[in-house]
Length: 101
Image (cartoon, rainbow, N blue to C red; front, side, top):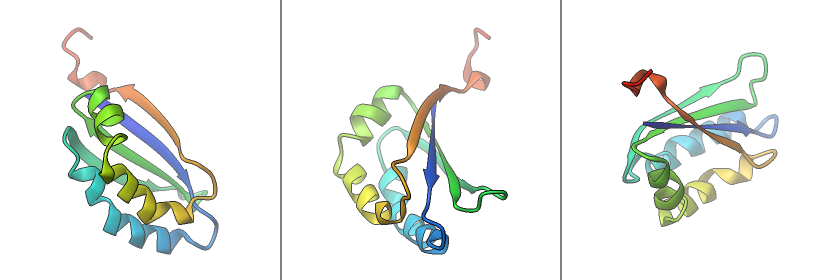
């Protein structure tokens, strides 16, 4: 299992518009083959900072499958107008799912 963490910084004052746009556009990620979970959280100290967690069956399902799809373009078109800067994306391994740890 691969977890993707995207740090999304929204222009101050656009947070509620971003949340509404996310609720409409999230299906483009959630419906992507290989996506197992999607969760958006919001910062308390920095309310314009969001973290988007998604779980994927493999790194390839996220990078090659989702990033190479029309769903990615639709996702970005639905939310990117609110970004203060490009999101910072990181892939990590969920150690709970590893039998060798």
